[in-house]
Every structure is written in structure tokens, then in C-alpha cells.
Image (cartoon, rainbow, N blue to C red; front, side, top):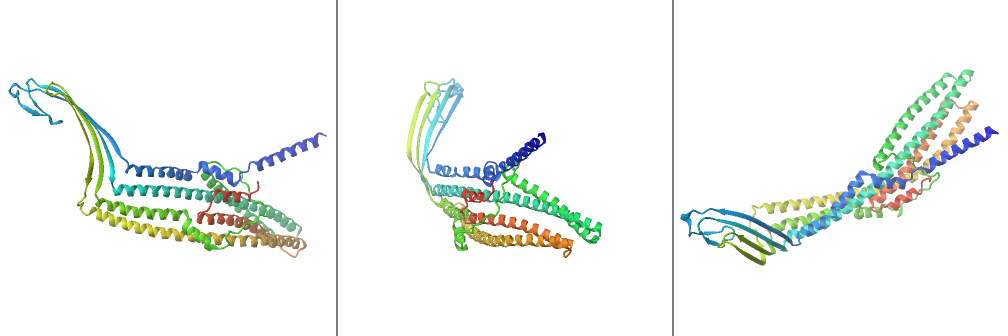
Length: 457
């Protein structure tokens, strides 16, 4: 009675361990949430966007009044000789004239001024303010681009790990099959039903699959390290794709709408368009160096002089008015800077055209990648069935003596390679679907959730 109970207890432990392993598998959305919290590139883009939001207050500051206080306190000790008595001297600070009484004087002059300046016409500052709003929009578009890039990078790294796992599992399954074939060849050689050539062929296939296993293990480690660099922690077990999933074709099923969207809504194109507007504003801002400026100025000052009775006193002064400045000649420097900004604006326009063409190319390539990937998946699914049938037929033929060992080995290799290619084709098709939406500027976290539904929970 004790042995069956012990076996039942061990079975429960094994089942619990398997259940715990499956329950701890992380899916694509969980990995994405880890990347949002830990990816350094995304954190850098988020900080850059926060810095960009300060551009508008800085640009607006040039149009608002400035208020400042200046002051001074100076002590002046003067020792006058008797021959200087009766002379009239002028205070260098206040301009007030006093008569030297002889014996010197001890004066302390305290002065402070409150001044306000309100720009009335400064075209360069207005253009700077308009540029600040464009620069904030650029930083927001770049942050949105970084969000899309994070989605595609996480998905790429996630499926790279799954592909490496599939490759390793396929290689180990092939090793098991080759090991059995090698043992069979050795037995048949010992009994004299096969030649040594079959044994050598099986041994060669075994040695090859061992080398492939080492390469697959190394590749899996590299892919897991790449994912770790994004999420900041060692990745746990990843949820694989469900068996027999059906991939959906892109909608609309026509590349032209996708290309059109990429040429207008791609975030890279948006950034380039805003940079063209910034360059245009820069031309106007530079030309403003030729324009006059007009400011409203107001000030209030107070001067206190403490010392001898003839020198002590308090003075107040208040004033308000306008101040203008007209530039006349600056050594042709402004003209040169205007020509420079015109050339930079032309550069920005050409950069925009290059970005637009690149976005259109990415959309076309991704669209073709999705469609060709779906066709490839269907073909490989049929090839997997055929390869499985071919392997079974070769095994049966080997047993009855109409097939040789190398035929079985080749059939095994073809089956496992087909399975690896099929899983890789599925991953590539899914990734191309995400890249297509990213090129069109419409990739969102909800699209990642749709892909996550294809995973086995």
C-alpha cells in the first residue's frame, strides 16, 4: 500500500511543478510592461519629451515684461585740507554740488532702482516663441516614435527568443531521432544485415546534430540577453504561440492606403515636416535683425545720502516711456546669416522628402512581408504534413529493406527543418504586421494586445 501512495504523491508533485512552470510564463504584454519601466532608450525619450515641454514657456518669456532691482551702497571718506575750505565740489553719483567746509566729510550714498521693460515690437522674439511651439511638437512626435519603436523592439526580441527555443527543441528532437537511428544501424551491422557505411552515415549525422545543438544553445542565450537588455531583468519563461493559429491579412488589403498613410502620418515624416516649419521661422527670425525694436520702459529710483548736514538728503525719481533702437549696419553679418538659414531650410525640405520616401518604402516592404509570409506559412504547413508522411514511409521502407539509412536521416532532417522554418515564418509575419502599422503611424499598444491573444496562456 505504501508504494502506490508514494507514486501518487510523486505524480502530484510533478504535475504541480509543471503547472507552476506554465503559470509563471510571461506573455508579450507583461514583457512590454517591464520594458516600459526599465528600457533605457524609452526612458531617455520620455525625459527628452519632458524637456521639450519647457520650450514654450521659455519662448513666451521673451514676450513678457522683465522686472529687476539694482542697488548700491557706497561710503566715501574725504579729508579736506584747510586751503581747500570754501571750494565747490560735485558728488560723482548724484551730481549735487556742495561747499567744502574744511576738515573733511564722511558720506554714505545708498541708491536702488526698480526697472520694468515690456517689449512692444521685437519680431525675433515672436518668431522664437512660434519656434518653441513647433519644437515642443517635435519632441512629442519623437516620443510617440520612441513608443512605437519600443513595441516593435520588444516584439522582435520576444519572438527571437521563441524562434531560438524552437530551433533548440527541434535540434534536440532531431538528436534523439538520430541517436535511435545510429543505434539501429550499429545493431544491424552487428547482425550483418547492413554495411558499415550505414553506421558511418548515422554517426556523421549524430556528430552534426551535436554541433548544431551547441550553436542553438548559444543562440538562445544571445537572444535572451538581447531581451534582458530591453526589460532590465532576466527574462522568465515566455508564452509560446498557440498551435494552429490563423494569421489575419492586413486590412485594407491594398498597399496604396498604407503607403499614403505612411507618407502623411508616419512620425518620422511628422518630425521632418515640423523641422521645415522651424527652418522657415528661423529665416524670418534672422531677418528681424534688420528691424527696429520698441520697448516700454518704466523705472523708480531712490537715493539717500547720509553725512554732514550740508550733504545729507533723499532723492526720488520715477519715469515711464518708450525706447526704440534702429539697426543701420552690421558688417553684412545679418545678410550672411539669412542666406545660411535659407540654405538650411532647403536642406530640411530635402530631408522631409527623403523621410517620406523611406516611410513609403517601409510600408510597402512590410505589406509585402505580411502577404508573402502568410503564403509561406500555408506552404510550410503543407510541407510539414508531407515531410511527416515522407519520414514515416522511409522508416517503413528501412525496416523492410527497400530504403537505406541515409534516406531516413534525410527525411528526419527535412521534417525538423520544415518545422523550424514554419515557426520562423509565423513570427516574421506577425512582426511585419506590426512594422506595417508602425510605418503608417498607427501602431498602438492595443495592436500588441491583439498579438498577445495568439499566445498560449
